[in-house]
Image 1 (cartoon, helix red, strand yellow):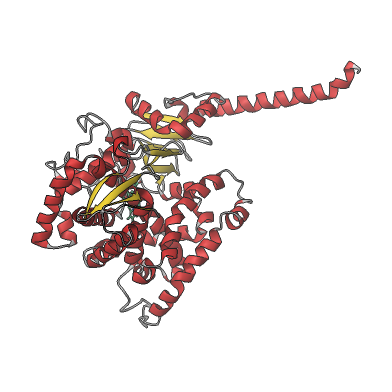
Image 2: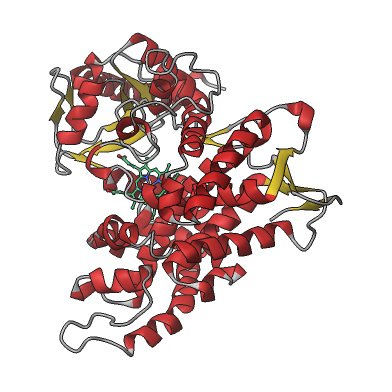
Length: 508
Ligand code: HEM
C-alpha cells in the first residue's frame, strides 16, 4: 500500500481531533466563566472526569452529599447532564422559603424529573388548582371522613391477612402496605366503589413506578421521539384512558346534580372527585382534567406514605420493646376518646416513633428540590445561574449530632418531651425536611400522618409483629439513582392475630 493512500483518512482524523479539542476548550471556558465554578465540588470537576463522578453519584449520591455536608455550607455534585447544588444550612433554607416561584420553581422539578407532559398529560401544568384542594377541602375533611378510613383499614388488612387468623402470617411488607394505602386513597378520593376494585387500586399504585422509571428514560430522549415512546412503549395513554373509564360513570352520575348558576356539583359525596370538580376553573371542568389530577395526587400520596409505613413496621418488628408502651398508649386514648382524628393526634408516643423512623431510615438525601428559573443570589452572595438544580441535604441534617444526639441510634421516644410546635410529625422545621420547607411544604402531611397512625394503631391492637427472618436484623434500605431512599421492597414481616396459631405466606 502506498503511504499517501492514508492521507485523506489522516486529514479526517486530524480534523475530528481538532474539532474535539475546540469543543473541549469551548466547554472549559464556559464552565470556568459559570458562577457555579466558584462553588466547591464533591467528586471531580473536570469536563471529562466529572462524568466519572456523575456515574459514582448515580449509585452513591447520598454518600457524596454526606461528604459535602461535613466540609462545606454549599457545594455541588455532578449529575449526568447538569450540576446539582446542595445547600446545608438554615439561612439558605430561609432564602428558599422567601423566594418566589418565578425564581425557584418546585413544579419544574417534578415536571422535569417525571416528564409529566408525557407520562401523564401536558394539561396538568396548565393550572395547579389541585394543590389548593389538598390544602383546603381535603385537609379540612379528614376528621369528618375518619370513620370511613377506619372501615377501609379493616377491609384492606383483611385483604392482606386473608382468611387465616391463626399463628404467624408472613407478608411482603412494602407491597402489602402499598396495597393498604392505595385502598385508603381510593376510598378518601372517590369512595368504596373504587377502593374495593383491585384493578383500580393497582393502576394507581403502579403509576409511581411509571412516572419515576419511565420519566428517567424519557429524559434521555429527544423531544420528537418522546410522544411515540410514551404512548407505544410506556402505555401512558392507555393507562390514562383506563382511569378515565373508571371515573366516567361516577362523575356522570354526580353531574346530574349540578347547581344551575355555578355548575358546581351539589349534594355530591364529600370527596376528592367532588372537590376537584368544584374547585376547577370553568375551562378545566372535564373528565380528563379531573382524571390527570386524581392520578397526580395518588402519585404524591401512595408511595410516600407506603414507604414511611414500611419503615415504621420494620422498626416495630425490630425494636420490639416499644410495642408494649405503644399499645398501652393507644388503648388508653381509644378507651377514653374513641377512634377519631383527634385521638390520633393525642398519640404522642406513636407520633415520636413514626417521626424517628422517618428521621433515621426514611429521610431523603436530597429534599426541597428547586430549579432556578431566573439567576438567583443567596443572602451570603452565592450566585446560582438559571437552569441549575438546587436541593437541601435532608438526610445529612437528620443525622447531624448537633440536632440529634447519637444520631445513628434508633430512639423511638426521642421527640416525646420536645416542643410539639417544632417536633411533632406535622411540624415544618429547618432541622427536619421530611415534608419539605417553605411555600411548597407537603400539604398532604396531615392526611398521611392520620392515616399512618390509624393503620399502626389498628394493627398493634389486633396483631403481634416480628421480622420474618428474625436473626437477620432490620432489612437494609435501597437507593434509587443514588439519592432516593426506599425501604427494602422484598423484605417480609410476620403478623399474628393476638390469639391463635397457624402459618401462611401471603404477598401482593
Ligand atoms: C409520608 C408521606 C408523605 C411525604 C414524606 C411527603 C413529602 C413531600 C415532600 C418532601 C414534598 C415537597 C416539599 C418541598 O419541596 O418543599 C411534598 C409535596 C407535596 N405533597 Fe407530599 N408527602 C407525603 C404524603 C402526601 C399525601 C398523602 C399527599 C396527598 C395528596 C401529598 C401531596 C403533596 C402535594 C400536592 C405536594 C406538592 C405541593 C406544592 O407543589 O406546593 N403528599 N410532599
